[in-house]
Length: 70
Image (cartoon, rainbow, N blue to C red; front, top):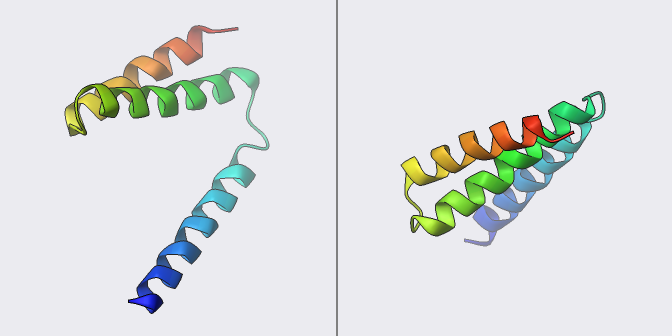
């Protein structure tokens, strides 16, 4: 069980580091879109009790709102 936790922690850490590196060359609009999609996904999931449709819908709406923010 400890090996699985270490592997999971390593995978999460690697994913976060690669995600941060991928955002280096993004424009402000692209960053706002990504942030909006992330926040929308979390909010949609929370509102619908973890529903996949709610999560995807929240991400879509949040991405659109983030894209329109200047």
